[in-house]
Image (cartoon, rainbow, N blue to C red; front, side, top):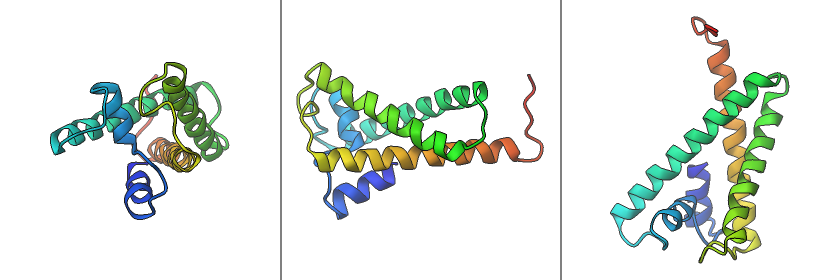
Length: 134
């Protein structure tokens, strides 16, 4: 997700802000101004993505894992939609008005994240020696 985001932002120049800019706005109230704020924002964003992965793993336990890649893509899309709707609802400066290119880029990143998370969870579930103890 972050790799796609950085490629999309820096090389393809599709979006107007990165996931780490979103995290910085939530932490500092403004985009990161130096390398230290950028690093903290990136770490925070990665931890947030990990938290969302934990939520997805609990959801996947409650429902069947059949079609896990599609469910992962859908989860990534829905999570991204909700997360990016919050700044619009609360009128967070810099985040409440993003262009369609940025949103498309972030939705692509979220779908990549969801599919990757689902694939890793499936791989971990099918790895020999890793069994559900409950």
